[in-house]
Image (cartoon, rainbow, N blue to C red; front, top):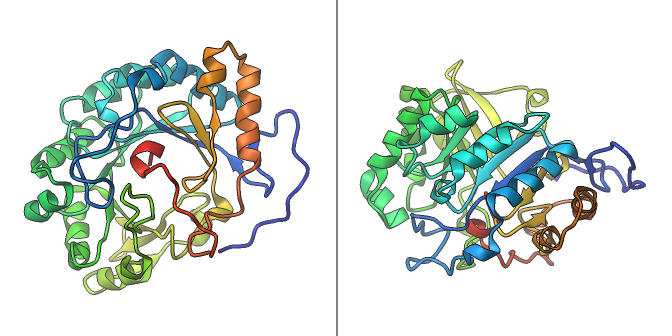
Length: 343
């Protein structure tokens, strides 16, 4: 892991969402629901999970107020996640509300794409800028086995609708899993290249509800690069171009098309992390793998001012750890699964 500077004195005034290692959060990941309409084997059991009661979820008004506080603290990108964000019926209104904030942040969304075809145009009109669609395989049988749903055609239509609506660049997120789809990573890349989608492979992380993740069987970045290189020539883009982006990007066969690999486990990028997270029930998390979080919903409903909310957010970010700690002896997988935290 890249080393970080030593802790420093907490900033005051307009320093933004800084932590003790000098990182500043400018990217907010917002889970708008913990519900999902797929049952991916590496995320949750076949029967699903106990969803949080709707009364515990932030209302649209509460959600927009909190996001507005984050924007006032220097956040410049808001990414909507879930669960499956398209299951929030008011999603278009939420996007429009974020787009009306000053200064206006860029707005992205990560989705499984199942319901995207019917709403892509309205989301674009409301102010959504970009979309990432999770798609681990282009084989219908493997897709059904992985997600426990026969919905690949719907995802394909959703991707096409996103491109048609101008939610570009349309990105595809894929997780390679040993013995399931690891032998077809080059096929997925070829499929995306043919359609003008930007592919990002993501190492599988210990965020499943079953706590069954095993690093020994995880398909790592080196192996993904090797498998892709059997069919394509990959040229790394300069490290300086990456900034705080999680993906290491490569030109494919000389470009201009690229492919990215997010090596969250084997090559962590914690030293440049600029993300904060807000759960659907109003908890602020400074890291996907944090074992603590700060409640905003309670203070919000008790009449807290924007400044009081900002102080709570700043406090949560200030105690952000040096790194996620995967592989260290004292690492513990978060109690909340990814579907509850937000991707």
